[in-house]
Length: 149
Image (tube, rainbow, N blue to C red; front, side):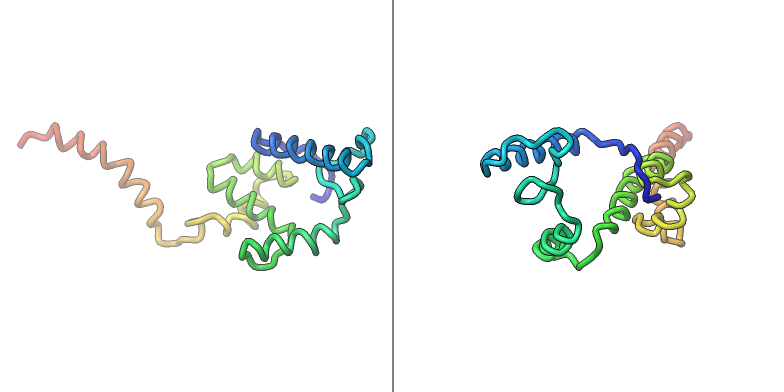
């Protein structure tokens, strides 16, 4: 955790990043700053094309965006929970989700992130029963059709 790692970017993310980078370059040109030099062509930058300072991002962009969206105040780090719970709920392999989060094994997911997945905290078996009844219904109907009346 906390180190540098490769992260898979899904096609919509790649497209959004390319669009943002193009917008940043256009803004720099419009401000008369010229094209960003290689290695300093950031996807997200300050108003003059330089590095976006984390405190500014958090205090003036992140918190105001949360407020406008009607969401309670939270840290940017908590987006990890959102990613992990949504990926797992969508059926992504826990090993892939763990890799994207920088964990060496999926065990951490089940310890920390599983509580964010809908129905994972149910202890009444209703989600399983529902799944089984949906799957079993067509088979039961076939069986009833062949039973002599």
